[in-house]
Length: 89
Image (cartoon, rainbow, N blue to C red):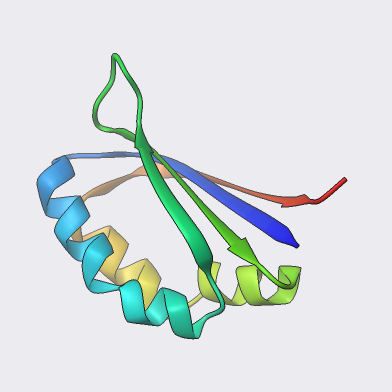
């Protein structure tokens, strides 16, 4: 099992969340499960998203999907975006 975490800031959480929710089918087809969205307690526009995948290849493919990247850019994601892949230990 692989856990992908993505941390970034957004201009407007509500606009970002609408775009994120609109990509649910893309994430499911890409192998993502147990998707969790968190907001920093004192910085509500700082977002952490975690998703589980069967393989690192699935996680990397979804992370590099141009449709996902374009939607997130249009939703106000502020670079840099930190992406990490974790293996079960």
